[in-house]
Amino acid sequence: MGHAYTYRCRNCGFEDKFNQGHGFLIHSQPLENYLKLNKKLFHYKTHRLLKRLSKENNDLFVKAGFQVYKCPKCKILYDKIEVTVFNHNEVVHKSEFRCSKCRSRLKLTNIHRLKNATCPVCHKSTFRKVSTHFQLWN
Ligand SMILES: [Zn+2]
Ligand SMILES: [Zn+2]
Image 1 (tube, rainbow, N blue to C red):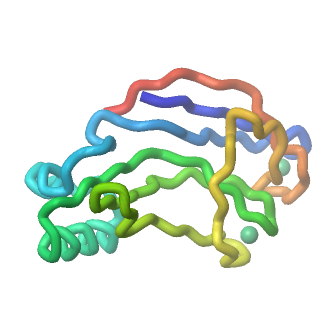
Image 2 (cartoon, rainbow, N blue to C red):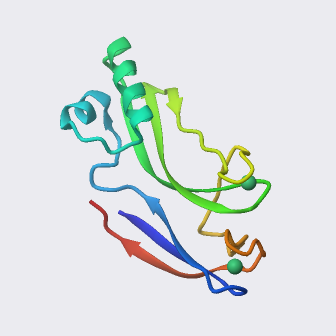
Image 3 (tube, rainbow, N blue to C red):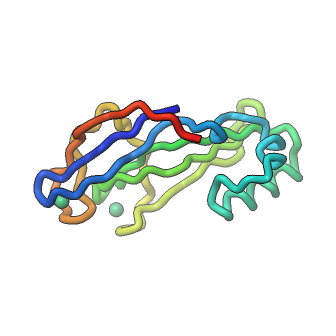
């Protein structure tokens, strides 16, 4: 369950949707359970890393969900599946993403409050939130 945010550029009309929240298979669970599902929900590198971590420690939890990130330089938005692996309260692994334009490290953003961002097409700061939908994923 989560939200889908639609943004539209007032300058060029480009429209995009960003997801935030947790899906049916994408939620907190013991890492072993995820690996038993035998479904590759994540990037292959992440999957490989999860497998390796589970071999070192069989007491890990994995949490994943759609998060919206923003490039601190370009102010362009991205939605990504953030994966966090916990060993009790300690974070063992957390996803990191880079901007595809300038390679800066993306920062998590509070999309609930974010009204304006930069349009990825025309690069003007006229990318506006136009709607929010409640959404169910699977
Ligand atoms: Zn635009
Ligand atoms: Zn950037």
